[in-house]
Image (cartoon, rainbow over all chains, first blue to last red; front, side, top):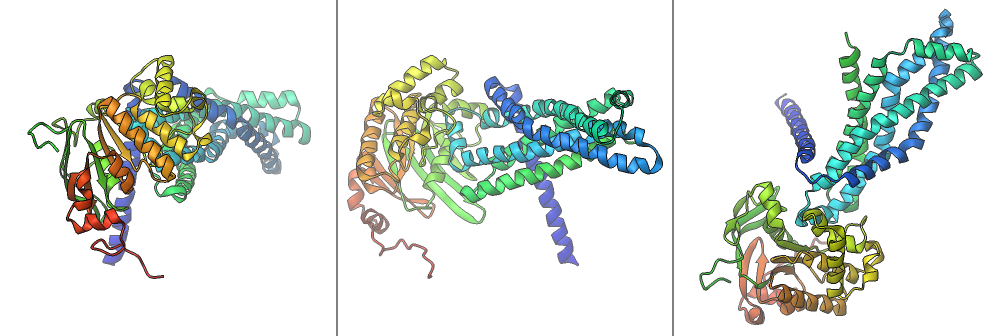
Length: 258
Length: 261
């Protein structure tokens, strides 16, 4: 029994230590915001890389998500003659939940992995130490631009994902399910509230920060050559994905919980 | 060594550093005088790189004192540490060039990002430093991946001296190079350090390189400095560990940990 309790205790202490390290890392990254020089060109480069180049993957997943959502909600609602709610369900699901979550997970896979690999390679080839010896703070030069880019870019991507996702539902609703286009749009607009969109964008900002933080954190602490970099990449994607889903629940509770 | 009572440029006293249960530095004591070229020799895994990283502030020792010009640097606040870095140059074993930047941007990096110098001026200095290590301006436009190992080392050397530092560290400067290129790099190190009037600390297990660039040689073994003396005395050290290492003999007091197949 004592052995079991000791193992549980050790695991819990390990979890607390890891959380402390992660929070400390995030605070060091954000603290760099208040000590110039900042690197606007690097921030812009990360925004373009994270945002512009993620548009195809986010757009594709958003449109098919909206289409499937319309099909499935129609199947369900038609069983109790509530087909007219399809447009509302699609727009609320996409703006509140699926837009930010799908975009967050896609960006975690595409960008979080690349961040961990790039920073991890810099770590194992001494490039991060070289930055320090050249009087350049790695947190200011590498971490802060990525954290800010995540914070800025994912809400922008989610605006696009929302529009494309709702459009996907509209296509299926009007072409396949026979809804009147004007009625579908009216239903979409009538029940959509400003808070639905705002909550989704706040979530997106948080998810973007999580993706960048996990990419930078695991890359920065990678060890042991190619194998270590590979592990860092895996950890970055897995931990970002899990944290996105946990944060999504917590934010949904904060915005809409009773 | 600062036997004349002058404050050494670098003074290391009782430095200990371990990673988990493995003790890497176990009370290292060593000084390096102003303008001196100190070479630390020792086998692979004896803690040479760890010692240099401790002096640079990249690693924090668990105990001991590291003074630069008499000023304690262990536990130095971040801002002061950054200012101290302006006085250092470092050539990394694997060159550690930034893949995403062109060669001249690598050389100018410390000037532009670390000191806020205007890019055009930094570029001119970078091209001068590239010329000093025998590389033309056209090389400056290439990316590091397009260079051979020897050229990468030269670029890394140009980057280390770009800001004309007071103290330059060389981590295995000739590892992985053919003997001719290694000699070229050794000559460049000697010439450039002399021109700058800098203090140099090098770590290597290449005795040809050590003999060429050292004023003084120290040997690190099992986390301690077990011998130090003028470069010319290394062959007559009277220390069996140094003798074995210098002559590259498998037999002797230094036992390599080799597992049976």
